[in-house]
Length: 178
Image (cartoon, rainbow, N blue to C red; front, side, top):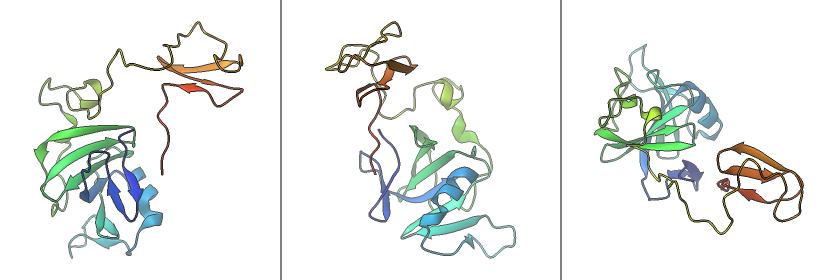
Protein backbone atom coordinates (compact mmCIF):
# COMPACT_ATOMS: atom_id res chain seq x y z
CA UNK A 1 0.00 0.00 0.00
CA UNK A 2 1.07 3.59 -0.41
CA UNK A 3 0.96 4.39 3.26
CA UNK A 4 2.95 6.66 5.50
CA UNK A 5 5.57 4.44 7.12
CA UNK A 6 7.70 5.38 10.12
CA UNK A 7 11.02 3.69 9.38
CA UNK A 8 14.50 4.52 10.62
CA UNK A 9 13.32 7.77 12.24
CA UNK A 10 11.95 9.23 8.99
CA UNK A 11 8.67 8.96 7.13
CA UNK A 12 8.70 7.88 3.51
CA UNK A 13 6.30 6.90 0.79
CA UNK A 14 6.79 4.18 -1.83
CA UNK A 15 7.76 6.75 -4.46
CA UNK A 16 10.40 8.41 -2.22
CA UNK A 17 8.29 11.45 -1.34
CA UNK A 18 10.00 12.53 1.90
CA UNK A 19 8.07 14.95 4.12
CA UNK A 20 9.71 17.43 6.45
CA UNK A 21 6.43 18.30 8.17
CA UNK A 22 3.16 16.52 8.93
CA UNK A 23 0.02 18.57 9.57
CA UNK A 24 -2.03 16.13 11.61
CA UNK A 25 -5.64 15.82 12.64
CA UNK A 26 -6.11 15.21 16.35
CA UNK A 27 -6.23 11.40 16.10
CA UNK A 28 -3.04 11.19 14.00
CA UNK A 29 -1.31 13.77 16.24
CA UNK A 30 -2.01 11.62 19.30
CA UNK A 31 -1.18 8.35 17.52
CA UNK A 32 2.28 9.57 16.50
CA UNK A 33 2.99 11.23 19.88
CA UNK A 34 4.60 8.16 21.53
CA UNK A 35 7.33 8.31 18.85
CA UNK A 36 8.16 11.95 19.51
CA UNK A 37 11.76 12.92 20.14
CA UNK A 38 11.00 16.38 21.54
CA UNK A 39 8.54 17.76 24.04
CA UNK A 40 5.33 19.24 22.67
CA UNK A 41 5.95 22.88 21.83
CA UNK A 42 4.10 25.79 20.27
CA UNK A 43 5.04 26.59 16.69
CA UNK A 44 5.33 30.26 17.62
CA UNK A 45 5.80 32.03 20.92
CA UNK A 46 2.19 33.24 20.89
CA UNK A 47 -0.06 31.69 23.56
CA UNK A 48 -2.58 30.46 20.95
CA UNK A 49 0.07 28.63 18.91
CA UNK A 50 -0.78 25.13 17.76
CA UNK A 51 0.91 22.18 19.40
CA UNK A 52 3.80 20.46 17.64
CA UNK A 53 6.65 18.06 18.33
CA UNK A 54 9.49 16.44 16.45
CA UNK A 55 10.16 12.86 15.46
CA UNK A 56 13.87 13.24 14.70
CA UNK A 57 13.97 15.94 11.97
CA UNK A 58 10.26 15.73 11.11
CA UNK A 59 7.84 18.23 12.68
CA UNK A 60 4.36 16.91 13.53
CA UNK A 61 1.93 19.80 13.94
CA UNK A 62 -1.69 19.68 15.08
CA UNK A 63 -3.98 21.11 12.37
CA UNK A 64 -7.58 21.84 13.45
CA UNK A 65 -8.80 22.23 9.83
CA UNK A 66 -8.12 18.55 9.15
CA UNK A 67 -10.50 15.73 9.98
CA UNK A 68 -9.23 13.83 13.05
CA UNK A 69 -7.87 10.75 11.21
CA UNK A 70 -6.21 12.73 8.37
CA UNK A 71 -2.74 14.17 7.84
CA UNK A 72 -1.03 16.34 5.26
CA UNK A 73 2.57 15.42 4.49
CA UNK A 74 4.65 18.34 3.20
CA UNK A 75 7.95 18.03 1.35
CA UNK A 76 10.71 20.64 1.58
CA UNK A 77 9.60 22.00 -1.82
CA UNK A 78 6.05 22.54 -0.52
CA UNK A 79 4.50 19.65 -2.45
CA UNK A 80 1.81 18.17 -0.25
CA UNK A 81 -0.19 14.97 0.09
CA UNK A 82 -3.38 14.36 2.02
CA UNK A 83 -3.24 11.01 3.81
CA UNK A 84 -6.62 9.60 4.76
CA UNK A 85 -6.14 7.56 7.93
CA UNK A 86 -3.17 5.79 6.34
CA UNK A 87 -5.36 4.12 3.72
CA UNK A 88 -5.58 6.44 0.69
CA UNK A 89 -3.19 9.19 -0.38
CA UNK A 90 -4.11 12.22 -2.47
CA UNK A 91 -1.60 14.42 -4.34
CA UNK A 92 -2.68 17.95 -3.47
CA UNK A 93 -2.80 20.47 -6.31
CA UNK A 94 -1.34 23.24 -4.16
CA UNK A 95 1.96 24.19 -2.56
CA UNK A 96 1.98 24.40 1.24
CA UNK A 97 5.20 25.91 2.59
CA UNK A 98 6.75 23.72 5.32
CA UNK A 99 7.19 26.74 7.59
CA UNK A 100 3.40 27.32 7.72
CA UNK A 101 2.08 27.72 11.25
CA UNK A 102 -1.49 26.74 10.44
CA UNK A 103 -4.05 26.52 7.65
CA UNK A 104 -6.94 28.96 7.51
CA UNK A 105 -9.46 26.68 5.80
CA UNK A 106 -10.00 23.13 4.63
CA UNK A 107 -9.59 24.00 0.92
CA UNK A 108 -7.50 20.87 0.41
CA UNK A 109 -10.61 18.67 0.65
CA UNK A 110 -11.96 20.03 -2.69
CA UNK A 111 -10.88 18.45 -5.97
CA UNK A 112 -9.82 21.06 -8.57
CA UNK A 113 -10.92 18.70 -11.39
CA UNK A 114 -14.54 18.08 -10.39
CA UNK A 115 -14.94 20.48 -7.44
CA UNK A 116 -16.20 17.55 -5.37
CA UNK A 117 -14.90 16.32 -2.04
CA UNK A 118 -11.61 14.49 -2.64
CA UNK A 119 -13.01 11.38 -0.96
CA UNK A 120 -15.79 11.22 -3.56
CA UNK A 121 -13.53 11.25 -6.63
CA UNK A 122 -10.31 9.61 -7.80
CA UNK A 123 -8.64 12.52 -9.62
CA UNK A 124 -6.01 13.17 -6.94
CA UNK A 125 -5.54 9.60 -5.70
CA UNK A 126 -2.01 8.23 -5.85
CA UNK A 127 -1.53 4.59 -6.84
CA UNK A 128 -5.07 4.14 -8.21
CA UNK A 129 -6.06 0.54 -8.70
CA UNK A 130 -7.28 -0.54 -12.08
CA UNK A 131 -10.74 -2.08 -12.17
CA UNK A 132 -9.45 -5.11 -14.07
CA UNK A 133 -6.36 -5.62 -11.92
CA UNK A 134 -4.43 -8.67 -13.13
CA UNK A 135 -4.08 -11.31 -10.49
CA UNK A 136 -2.64 -14.78 -10.18
CA UNK A 137 -5.82 -15.71 -8.31
CA UNK A 138 -9.08 -15.43 -10.18
CA UNK A 139 -11.59 -12.83 -9.03
CA UNK A 140 -13.49 -14.02 -5.98
CA UNK A 141 -17.20 -13.23 -6.04
CA UNK A 142 -19.48 -12.99 -3.03
CA UNK A 143 -21.13 -16.28 -4.06
CA UNK A 144 -17.89 -18.22 -3.44
CA UNK A 145 -17.94 -19.59 0.11
CA UNK A 146 -15.14 -22.19 0.04
CA UNK A 147 -11.43 -21.34 0.19
CA UNK A 148 -9.51 -22.35 -2.97
CA UNK A 149 -6.56 -23.49 -0.78
CA UNK A 150 -8.04 -25.42 2.15
CA UNK A 151 -11.78 -25.55 1.31
CA UNK A 152 -12.45 -23.56 4.51
CA UNK A 153 -15.02 -20.77 4.97
CA UNK A 154 -14.39 -17.45 3.18
CA UNK A 155 -15.21 -14.07 4.78
CA UNK A 156 -16.00 -11.27 2.28
CA UNK A 157 -15.11 -7.73 3.42
CA UNK A 158 -16.14 -5.88 0.28
CA UNK A 159 -15.97 -6.11 -3.50
CA UNK A 160 -12.83 -8.04 -4.37
CA UNK A 161 -11.64 -8.38 -0.75
CA UNK A 162 -11.87 -11.77 0.93
CA UNK A 163 -9.97 -13.99 3.34
CA UNK A 164 -10.20 -17.51 4.69
CA UNK A 165 -11.22 -18.07 8.29
CA UNK A 166 -9.34 -21.39 8.42
CA UNK A 167 -5.96 -20.66 6.75
CA UNK A 168 -3.75 -17.74 5.67
CA UNK A 169 -5.30 -17.35 2.19
CA UNK A 170 -6.48 -13.85 1.30
CA UNK A 171 -7.47 -11.96 -1.84
CA UNK A 172 -7.43 -8.21 -2.45
CA UNK A 173 -5.77 -7.25 0.84
CA UNK A 174 -2.55 -5.21 1.01
CA UNK A 175 0.19 -6.66 3.21
CA UNK A 176 0.94 -4.67 6.37
CA UNK A 177 4.58 -3.67 6.49
CA UNK A 178 6.44 -1.92 9.27
